[in-house]
Structures are given as C-alpha cells and as structure tokens.
View 1 (spheres, helix red, strand yellow):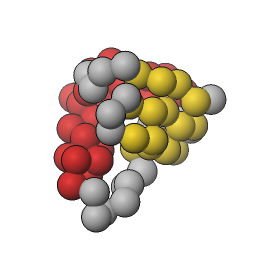
View 2 (view 1 turned 90 degrees about the vertical axis):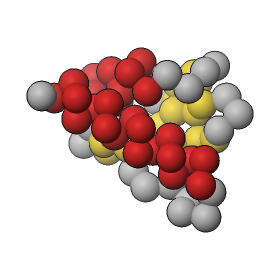
View 3 (view 1 turned 120 degrees about the vertical axis):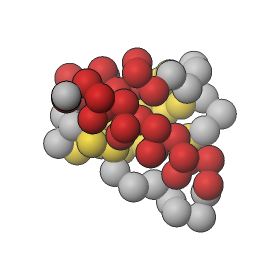
Length: 66
C-alpha cells in the first residue's frame, strides 16, 4: 500500500507504519520511503533530509512502543 502524506508529521506517519508493518509511503517534498516489520527502512544515505526524516519517524515509533 502506498500512502501519501502532504506534510511531515512523525507521529502520524509512525502510527501508519506501526499499524501496517510493511509497505511504502510518500511525504510531499521529501520523497518515498519503505517500511517493514513496523520500522522505516534506511533510505538513500546521501540525502540528508530523508535520513533525518527516517530517524525522526523511527524515534516516534519507539515512543509508541514504550
């Protein structure tokens, strides 16, 4: 399932990832991400913005798990 988010909201994306466990999503202005087992997979490490968003979302997922 490919979901498009119009804005970068780590909590909202984290709930989506945690619910579905596997799939893809797009954040407008940032790019496409994939996730598996309830965690966002590491994106292209040359893109600092995507890497930062990846970290924020996975941190929000950990917060939901606690």
